[in-house]
Structures are given as structure tokens and as C-alpha cells.
Image: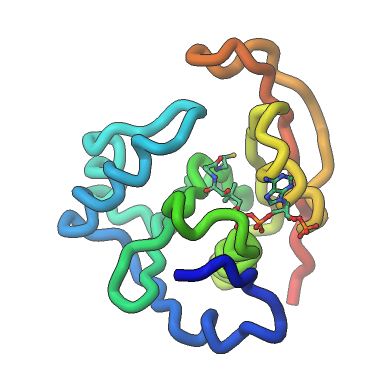
Length: 163
Ligand SMILES: CC(C)(COP(=O)(O)OP(=O)(O)OC[C@H]1O[C@@H](n2cnc3c(N)ncnc32)[C@H](O)[C@@H]1OP(=O)(O)O)[C@@H](O)C(=O)NCCC(=O)NCCS
């Protein structure tokens, strides 16, 4: 992987990314990636519970068979609560976050979900920018939400268009 950003001109990269429901065999790679995140990393056990409950909001993404990212949301009535969206460290800063967000929205649309909610650390500038670019708006603040860093969380939401 070079430093190329994923853009409209590099969509051939995207066509080679394969998404699938997360499975138990993904766990070693997922946990390794999760250890590189600062804000409330998940344990393998947390992912295992989601896999065993067959959460339809739990997906992985592979590029040339390497696990490059995943997301997890819970469905609550007609809302999706995004709990985790993470890329492998080697694949960050290349525009791939947009790819995961597009898949997240498509998955939510297929499930007839009308709103996505998420919390993001106010200091996580890249994630905040990604979400704003995607049309998420700030709807609140959760003070000292992240125990590890003491950071506040910004609560954001996006209403999805019914197709
Ligand atoms: C958050 C995350 C998914 C974003 O995905 P990404 O592919 O790295 O992000 P992108 O490359 O699409 O960048 C998003 C925006 O931030 C900008 N950006 C990227 N790196 C940046 C940096 N180091 N400094 C400032 N801005 C930066 C990009 O330019 C882009 O904005 P633009 O599209 O207007 O140009 C990814 O970085 C990640 O997995 N981080 C660790 C886990 C995490 O924090 N998850 C979010 C929890 S809420």
C-alpha cells in the first residue's frame, strides 16, 4: 500500500475491497487493529458477542485478503447507533473512511433505518471531519465521555433519505 489517496480517480481500489459479515475467524486481526485505536478500544469478547448475536450491523472489509477495516452499529427501532468504525493503521488517511461510511449508509438504507447516531471524541479531528463531510450534524456533547483520555464526546446524527 502506497500513500495514494482513495478518490474518484482511484475507484479501482475500491472495486477490489470485499465486505462481509464479521466472523470468529476475523477476530485475531480485528483485535490487533483495535489495539491501535486510542478511544475506548473493544476487547475480542465484545466483538465475539456481536458475532454470536448475528448483529447485521457488524461488517468487515478486506483488500487483497487483508482485513483493512470494520464497523459495528446497533439497530434501535428505526435508528442505527454507530459504536465502532475503524481502519487498519496502514490504511488511514487515504480517503477509505468515506468508503466505509458509504457502505454504512447503504446497509442502513437496506435495513430501512432512518437515522444514524454516533459519538466521537472532540479531539478526533479526522473522524469529526469525515462525519461532517458525510452530513452528520452535532446534536449534543457528552462531558468526559472517554475515560482513557477524559475527552468530551460530540454526539452527531444524520437523517437518511428514504428511497
Ligand atoms: C476515523 C477513520 C475511520 C477515518 O478514516 P480515514 O480514511 O483515515 O479518513 P479520511 O482519509 O477519509 O479523512 C477524513 C478527512 O480528514 C482529513 N484528514 C485526514 N488525515 C488528516 C490529518 N492527519 N490531519 C487533518 N486532517 C486529516 C482528510 O483530508 C479528510 O477530509 P477531506 O475529505 O475533506 O479531505 C480512521 O482514521 C480510523 O480508523 N481511525 C482510528 C479509529 C477511529 O478513530 N474511529 C472513529 C471513532 S468515532
